[in-house]
Length: 378
Image (cartoon, rainbow, N blue to C red; front, side, top):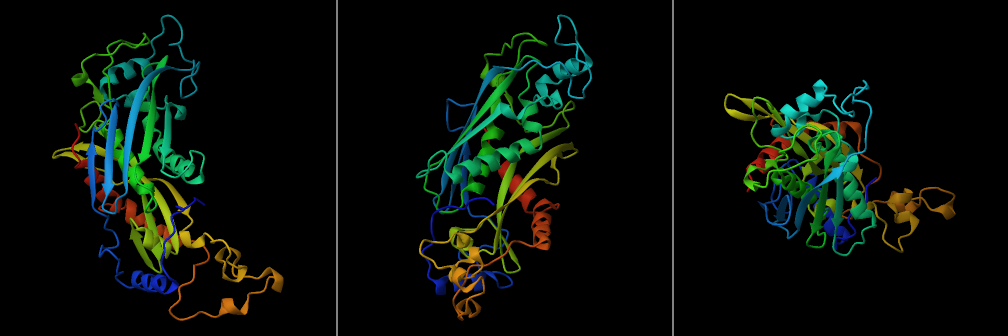
C-alpha cells in the first residue's frame, strides 16, 4: 500500500455523502464537470533550464506545478567478463571485436538502443523534493520508487545510457514540486518527467569502439535520448512511461481525480504504461500501450484522524476491542445522508476494467501519450 498525501479535505460528512452520491451516478457528475476519462487542463513547456540536458515544467489548472531537470555525466562501468546471454566475451582484451560490439557501433547514432540488455538500473538516479516534506518522508520516498520502477520496468532506458564496454552515462533526474501537494502529485510528476526525458539530449559520440569517449562539441549535433522520428536502422522508438491515477467510486472509474474526489474514493490505483512508435507510410504510428506496473494507494478516508474511536475507524473494521471484537451497534446503523469511509480493497474485475481502459487501442493511455507528443521540443 502506498501512502496518500497528508493534505486533509475539509468537507463535512454531509458534503462527502453528496459528493460520493454524485460520483456514483451513471454517468458520474464530477465537481468540475469533466467526463470520467477527461484530464484537467494543463500548461506544459520543455527546455526551461539552460544548465541541464533536458527539462520540463507542467502546471495543472488547480495550481499544482512541477519542474523536472535531467543531467547526464560520463561514468566508468564496472568490468564484465560475460555477454548478456552468458557467452564468453572477447572485447575486454586488447584486440577482440565481437559482432555485438560492431552492431552497437553501427547503431550508436540511432539512440543507444542497440546495446540490448547491457544497461543497469543503477545508472538512473531520481530525487523528489516536495514543500513541507523531508527527503526521507514516506510520500517522497514512495513517489520516487514508483516513478523509478516504471522507468526501469521496460529495461529500455538503461540500455540507452550504454556508451561502450568501459563507460556509460549516469542520469540524474531531479524533480521539484513547486507548490504544496493540493492533490496527489504522482500523475503531475510522472507527466513532467516524461516530457523532460523526451527533451533530453546527449552529445554525439566521436570516438570509436572501446576508446575513452570523446564527444562532438557542437550541441546542434547532439542526439535525443528518445528520438522523435524512426529511421531505417531504428524503425521502432520507445517512449518514457507515464503513471496515471485512477479511482473507483461505486461502479464508476474516474481518471485524474481531484483532492475532493480522492476523499470519497472507494479504491485508488496508480497504473504505469509505456508505448513504442513504429514507422509507417504516414509517419510515426503509435502502438498500443503496454502495462508496466500497477500499485494500490490508500485513499485519505482510510487514514484515521487522531481521537477517532475504534467503532468509527475503518482500519479496525469498526470493531470495539472492549466488546470482544464484536461489531458495535453504532457501526451497524447507517445514518442516511452521512458518508462513511469504505472497507476492503478493489476487486479483480474492477482492476481488469481499469487496465483495459488504459491499455486498449484508442484508450486513455494512448490518448495521453498522443497529447504529450504534441508538446513542442526545443
